[in-house]
Image 1 (cartoon, helix red, strand yellow):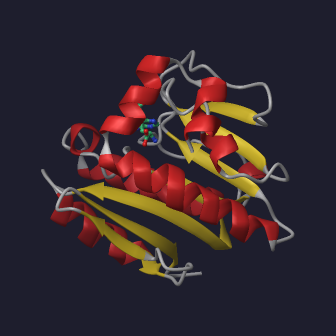
Image 2 (cartoon, rainbow, N blue to C red):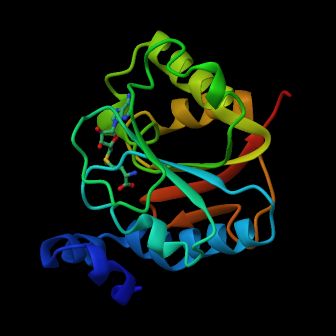
Length: 194
Ligand SMILES: C[S@@+](CC[C@H](N)C(=O)[O-])C[C@H]1O[C@@H](n2cnc3c(N)ncnc32)[C@H](O)[C@@H]1O
C-alpha cells in the first residue's frame, strides 16, 4: 500500500493515511476489492466523492488499470491526476446536480467522509439530505454499488436510518458491513427501490 501512496502523495499526506485507522481499511481492503470486483465486470465507471488533495492515489489503490475513475467535490481546484477520466465540481445538496448523460452511469460510488461525516452532515437541512440522496440514486446504475462510511459520532443514527430507507445492504466479499473500532461503520449498499 505504501508504495502505491508514495507515487502520488507527499510525506505529510502519507503520514495522514498512516495515522487514521479508517485509511488502512480503505487502502488495504476496500479499494483493492473494488478493483478486483470491477475486473470481473464489463462495467467499470467508478465515482469517488470528496477528493481534497490526499485522495490523489485512490485510483492506484484499486490495482486495476482497466477502470474509468471519476472524482467529485464541491470545492474547486482539487489536485486531479491525469489518468482520471473527469472531475465533477458539484454540491450534492443542490437539487438535480447532474444532466441526463450521467443518469444510471456509475457502477460504483464511494462515499467515505462526506454524507456520513458529522462535520458535513450536521449542517444539512432535511432538503439537503433529500437532494444528496436523490442525486446519488440518479447517477448510480440499478445494479450499482454504493460504498458508504459513517463516522460513529454526531447524527450517525439519523443518517443510518435515512440511508436504509433508500438502500439495502448487499453482499460484497467479506466487507459488506464492517465496524472499525468504535469509530467507523462501513457498508456496501445497492438500491432498495428500482
Ligand atoms: C473529509 S473530506 C474527504 C473525504 C474523502 N472521501 C476521504 O475519505 O478522504 C470531505 C470532502 O467532502 C466535500 N464535500 C462536503 N460537502 C459536500 C457536498 N455537499 N457535495 C460535494 N462534496 C462535498 C468537501 O469539500 C471535502 O473535500
